[in-house]
Length: 108
Image (cartoon, rainbow, N blue to C red; front, top):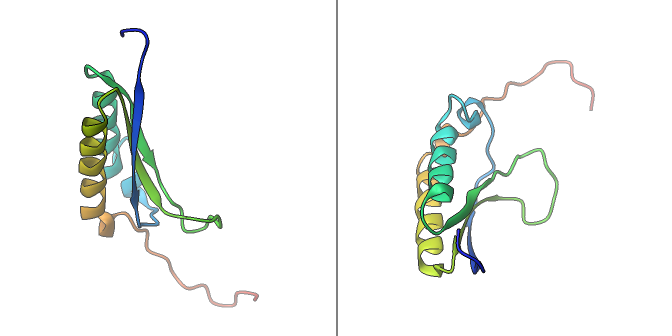
């Protein structure tokens, strides 16, 4: 890695709240995007990449999912790669939901 670094970061909001088995990094769809993120980090000029996934049971402002890519001085690449990963996530969003069942006799 050359010094000094010039980190630039692109962040793409993904309007999705997700949960379920496909978010397991070892076996689910999400694991493929994490492996892509690791490959970006290990490539020439790649510094960091990944996701922040929004869980529907978290009550915070701006709740959503996010993809980020940080490169060494290449803002266009950071944006392009973050948009690519976010688009792949969005395309599969229907698979990133867990089924919920009603519970009888619950206390409200």
